[in-house]
Image (tube, rainbow, N blue to C red; front, side, top):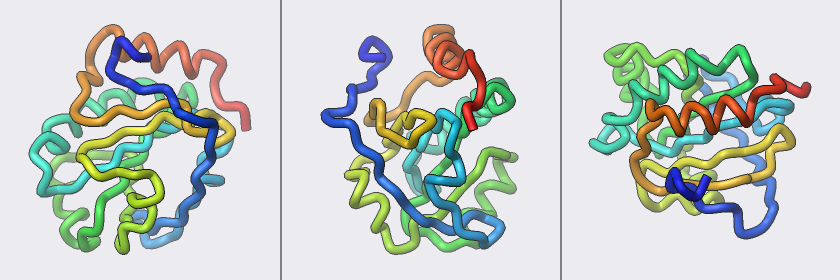
Length: 153
């Protein structure tokens, strides 16, 4: 993972959250239990975030049925702003909104985009700061290897 720009987790940690999804229902970390999760902190005003969104969508489409959950955590924007962006881009992976930035603070998401990889128990495995080439062969291979056994829950 380090050769792809991911830092290993400094300590094993599970950081729970409750955030509103685009359908208005709350989502918690437990909603993704048994799946690897790519948790991407972003905002519509963040140009690098906008650049990587189509590649994250392709990763989601390729690996969702094998157990990868791509979850975008929007930082503090209104649901209307986020819905407009999702409609413009055709994103289908789950987007949740961190309205009060409390989850972003706990995850220390100060630079955008910031991405965490969580294992099926919800433990932070690694993080990456900045844009990544989600379409690269090496990145795809890494995620395919993580989810090769499929969901555990």
